[in-house]
Amino acid sequence: MGLMFGCGVDIGGTLCKVAYFERTVEDGEEDSGENKAYRKKIHDALADEETYGETGRRDDHLELCSGELNGRLVFVSFETRTMDKFLEHAKEFNLFGGMGELRCTGGGARKFEEKIVELAGERMSKADELECLVDGVHFAINTNQPQLFAVNPDTFSMDKQHVRTYLSTEQQRDIFPMLLVNIGSGVSILKVNADGTRDRVGGTSIGGATFYGLCSLITGCTTFEEALLLAETGDSSGVDLLVGDIYGGDLEEYNLPANVVAASLGKLVRPEDRENVNKGDIARGILDLITNNVGQISFMHAKTTKVQNVVFAGNFLRKNTISMSRLSYAIDFWSKGELQALFLKHEGYMGAIGAVVGAVKNSST
Image 1 (spheres, rainbow, N blue to C red):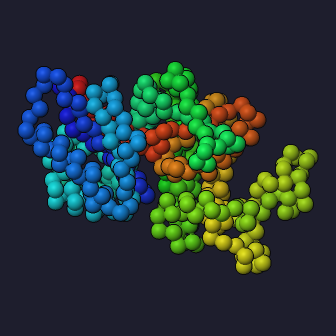
Image 2 (image 1 turned 135 degrees about the horizontal axis):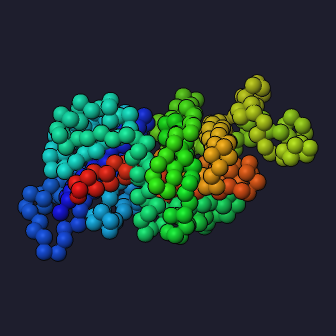
Image 3 (image 1 turned 135 degrees about the vertical axis):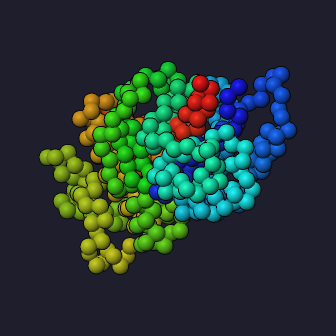
């Protein structure tokens, strides 16, 4: 019948992402008392914030029912710095006792391997993080549910969020080859083909952890969400040196409008600007700096690899409409409308999805 309970855990440098799988009990199938008891234990643990700590969250809106897997996926994430506390809780309540397979990926799969094996024993396995990332994207795109969407930087909904335009399931399957840009603590850039083969073509160390780290240092933010909310209150023109600040207006001979950034955080070299700056402007300036850098690098790799679709993934984009808007604008601007930026509904969970899907499929072979 295949795996009844499984878990994919993507342990990154900043966040730990968990995809829990629970198979549907089929008509006529006996659901043992042992399975019922374990299912209740896991449901209780998922409902209890103590399980994943104050930095954790359960993303109920992302729960995914899969006919291919004959079950559902539930998603939870928390900061990796609280991993030891999570493992202590798992040990206390024997959360891994009934798990068919606990498939771990990401750098933390090595770092925490000994502690996880102590709790899960042979049920714990490791998988390559880029393989899991690509497998997760392929699985999500090939479900009969909308996953990929574009945003229009100039169009807003009633709640002031950018309007998402989802691709049809047919369009989703037709986007290969694509450039997959995974923005986590750092950034990895891969060219992904329809058959699942991939090449890592580039990346940058300037990613989500850079934003969170600098904001924590300069503004005193204690969570990524707090840093992002602070950035939403700011205006990067208060800290960025713009083309208009240097030339007094547009630089028409190079098609550079006055509001284009000439030097990120460049105004902070001037004492009078440092005295008047606020934390929101600084957070927004840092966010835009990182986003613009990722956008330009992604564009250059898209051109050299000759792909039309650039798909952005990673928890950096969770509720981050500012960066999604700027990435969409950047890809459109630099490519003169030839390339399109796309985003994933399940954002940073692709590695965890790939891990648990692999575990479920392995159990069925």
